[in-house]
Length: 349
Image (cartoon, rainbow, N blue to C red; front, side, top):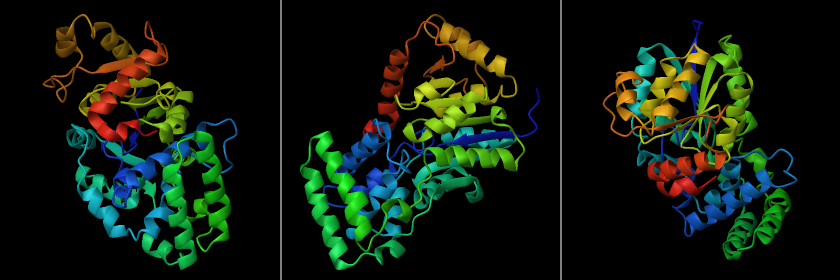
């Protein structure tokens, strides 16, 4: 089968940039990292709990932290400044350059704030029009916060930092975000910032599919975390190629191919064969088979010009079959590579 349009959609943080920008921005305020980790844990409790909150999506952490950023007078330029310190994943520039040369349309579908997404996109040469991300204007939001509301937010912050128990954390933050804030000048926390995560990522993917008249089965999606699982699963259900790159337990079960690697150029082994579903999965099976027995065979027969000189042979997994490997083993392996690439950001969902 010959593809009429070659489209690949990347999540940003993980596959293309190792940092968690929101985590780094929160570190600009006192005890911000600890506060972010508490709110990130609350995000997990809301998303993975037995009774998920209506309207709440994985990744809406980026809406929940905005009251605190605003109360501490963090600005749009602060987010941009922090982003300027970021780097890209090893091999990302080289891979994106080759994809463009080979006629691919490269898109980013990211939970990240626009200031970070556009910065990384610029570093990689991805046009702004191809980047879908979370819009945020802190200057506008800060105007809605009066002195009483600021005091409510800062008092809540002190309490959050004291809480260690999940049940107490959820109870307190349910009240703060969905009762106290809506009664204040801030208003509804989920209306203030529309985060591109979860279902919204799949919606963007579908809109790209419609715009270019290209079925999901002919589009590659690359993600790594809980905000990507619906996008990965959407492609997988259409018998397409969804790739989890150094993923966690919230993303790996929903992808069709796993790639644990120190360099994302290895993704080129898949993109260079796109258009032939069976050939791609035959390749992944061969890479799995020879990974522990004959690395020379892989180097000489299964690589591309872009990957031939790379030293560290990655781990590919056919997640549709998982021959001889338990899902738990694959998750452990991915988490190892995830820590090596992403550092402290790896432990966030």
